[in-house]
Length: 181
Image 1 (cartoon, one colour):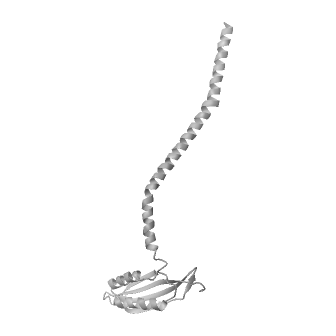
Image 2 (image 1 turned 90 degrees about the vertical axis):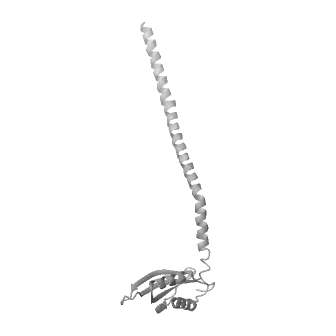
Image 3 (image 1 turned 45 degrees about the horizontal axis):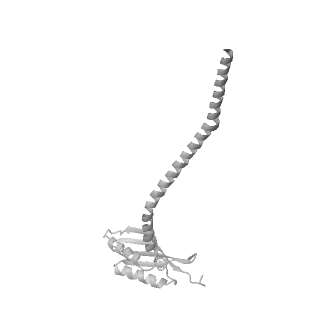
């Protein structure tokens, strides 16, 4: 009987050891590996979903790119190779006259070299109705030369007759020819 009890205890100890070995060396590593695989699968699923969502945005981005290329397509063309400052100043004066703007002052600043372009600051002042000034800026935007408006200051006339005094700082550009600058 004692032998039988010992035998049963031994069988239980061996069975317990087998269960422990099974859990420690087979089930737990396999469980960790399964968890890692599930996390990897979830990350891949998320990446695929993001890629699918991004691929739906691709036509919109292509459309934006085409619009920007169309807008910027004439960028190089709008920067002449020669200075032509006199022609530009004359065209500004003509635009001011066309819109009946008075007290005109157009004064170029000192030329600045920047990479392959030259910048010429231009100070403009005139007086007129707000609608006339608005039309002037619309036409200035439409000329075939790149003009960057840096600052616009509008002040009411001191006698309050509806006239507005405009002071603008702008920059025009021209390209440096090979051998120039």
